[in-house]
Length: 199
View 1 (spheres, rainbow, N blue to C red):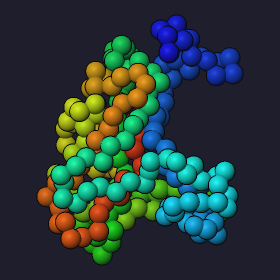
View 2 (spheres, rainbow, N blue to C red):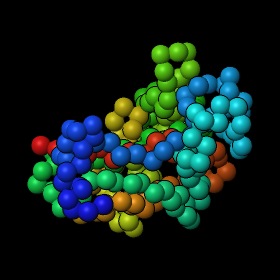
View 3 (spheres, helix red, strand yellow):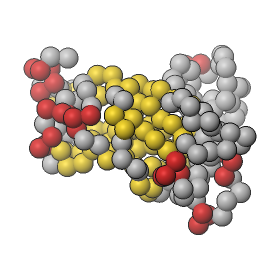
View 4 (tube, helix red, strand yellow):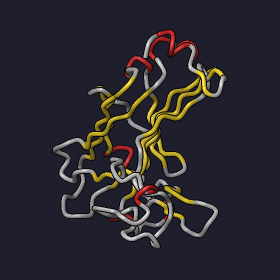
């Protein structure tokens, strides 16, 4: 994307430059529930309703329990954030995890559950809330730069980001969990998104 195109981004004739945005990694499934076979949250080759399943999307993705390898994802960013840090109000990377091994924890021992997918219809999918110590155990890198420890809010892990850590286009995200028992069910990345808010 050229500099002119970045500064003159328009949708239906309206400029979207310096408008708040959410860039995200795509997720499989259309939120249409278990009536679709196989279940959009757990399939290998969907055929029925394939047009609504986003079947090649990388999420959900599991994390390696032994912490020896990052789970790698690509996050596409359309704004040249590093070129205009003074125009930013906030820049936050949001990570939503499910921890099947923590499903029996008391509510006060977890970071809380969050809605993964849902609609006005009956089907809603929520996370299994990770334990509170997940903020100490999760590591996230952007373009191989390690981020500071996250904070938990409404079931999400929130990472503050320096604008210089991001590139226009594809950014490589690495997520790793450390100090986790290798014999329990792995953590699952449900959502990963970058919230960009301008002044």
